[in-house]
Image (cartoon, rainbow over all chains, first blue to last red):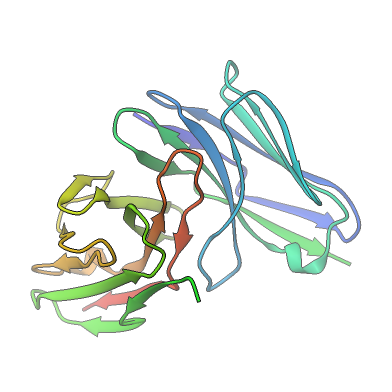
Length: 110
Length: 113
């Protein structure tokens, strides 16, 4: 089966850097997505990793290690509006399924 | 405006009364999918479709049906809803799953009493 683990909650200070980890054990692997979801809203796409390494996009970066089954999302210069749930999702092969982790609720404080 | 729309946004119904939640996208996307989101369980995929007349089960398909007769529409059908189907439902579309983000609809909050 598929197993994706993320911390349930994290708290960080405005202006700081936070790293949200995601570990996965899945049958097949095609790529890993990160989505952001504000309370009461739909998820929105942040990043996609298919090869090992770091992908940088503005204040957000995402890292993947396929051999370790590990990814992280790095958020820099945190802003209050970054308070949201961050969802890790793995695209598994052979069926075009997308399996989500339960999400990490990030709270940014002053 | 490129978007995914869902209707209704909110629905309260009773056990056993058939219902359909509609989903439509105007981006000519091949891939469409339905998810349910429950506290502590995250987003779980119900069904997905790679193209017209091509559908497949996700992780939690029991109690649901879908159809894909047109590229833009992907309705979710609950033939006999039960209280354990009370949830927040999202429809999503993508040009294709690999290398492509999914665009999510606004969600449908369903309560079955």
